[in-house]
Amino acid sequence: MDMIDQHPEHSDALVIFGVTGDLARKKIFPALYAMAKRGVLTLPVIGVASSKWSIAQLHERATDSINESGGIDDPDAMSVLLSRLTYVSGNYKNPETFAALREVLGTAVRPAYYLAIPPALFETMIQGLRDSGLAENARLIVEKPFGRDLASARELNRIARSAFPEDAIFRIDHYLGKEAIMNILYFRFANTFLEPIWNRNYISSVQITLSEKFGVEGRGAFYETAGCLRDVVQNHLFQIVALLAMEPPAYRGYGAVHEKTAEVFHAMRPLSPTDMVRGQYESYRAEAGVPQDSDVETYCALRLYIDSWRWQGVTWYLRSGKCLSETGAEVVVQLKAPPQRLFADSHPDGRANYLRIRLSPRSAIALAARVKRPGKEFIGDQRELVLVDEQQGAETPYERLLGDAMAGNGALFIRQDAVEAAWAVVEPILENHPPVVPYFSRSWGPESANRLIEADGGWINPMPESRRE
Image (cartoon, rainbow, N blue to C red):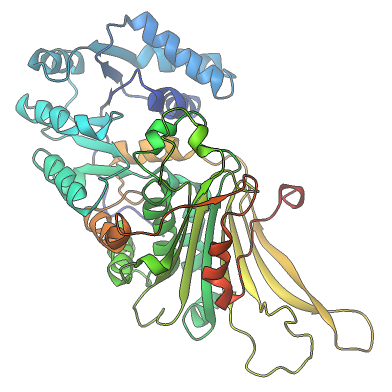
């Protein structure tokens, strides 16, 4: 499926605001290095920050970043990255900073601006670009979160649209850049056998798990401002739901995909407190910056409904949390049992066939089907038959998304109408929600989350590490 509607002109400069921050160090520099290794980093990269650094200090930060992310295994590529990297220091509120940026941009006429800065600074930055004339013919790249609720998401969009048209705004959710997430879209629509069963007639429920073994790791103060619902569920998990639930696009192009995913969000039934379980792992309140009476969830489970012709009556279960038993991300599509039970052991545990889509840490697609044991008796076992396993050498999410944004390819980015529709689904439970309940570290979360899904046979946990090889 060709996901590019047209062939827009490529950006001729990349400007990274907040280049001295953690996002640049952990994600952006490694992505740029990977692009240099593939020979596609051909444009100037201009870092902008308030720190009074020299270019040598910025080069040192970039080098440290690559060493931390896996080491420099291609000195020539590292030299290319450093040769393209320049720096502008200045206050974001000072027009002189943007005048200095204009001078460094030189002959570039189609820059891409990456706002690797806190959302509180977006308005100042975008106004500076607009007032200096630097927003003309440019692209804007912004990171999630896209607001904290529906009102703030709309305000953030108003600010962005004051200087940039919608097709020049690229909202990054790095999860959409993962190879396994892209494979959901391909798997859905490249295989004929799925379509006849991909509906309420054959699917009883869908569950999505995104689990992490580790905790907040010193980021307690930040997590107090977010929580699992805002940080993971409303964006990452909702995007997976949209790809699984969307109708076939009417034409080949990312605009059609955006239309169909937005339709899923609009069809989602707004959540109520009875659809939600919130948990907090036992040692969370011992984290720096976390108050002793914290009610912020480190675990969230939701029961979701999509009121559409295809999915009416199918229950979607979403859960994510920290300090759980395994690190992994999986989708389980639970099929309905056969209409007649010909064999006594067809599904003795109440679990009919299912499709498991493992997204991380190693991607795979498997079908759970019953297979007869040798002998005269009609007795069998349910086995997972692996259909697809991970391919090596895939681009990292940030490498892919940076390249796509600079090329003007919006396939893997989020449109504003989808952002607002997703916030509208969770809006009723952002403040009106049940209190957190404690759960033990290295468990699968609160017991009440099991009761949420017991009508559909319970959770299927991500495959343990010992079985992933």
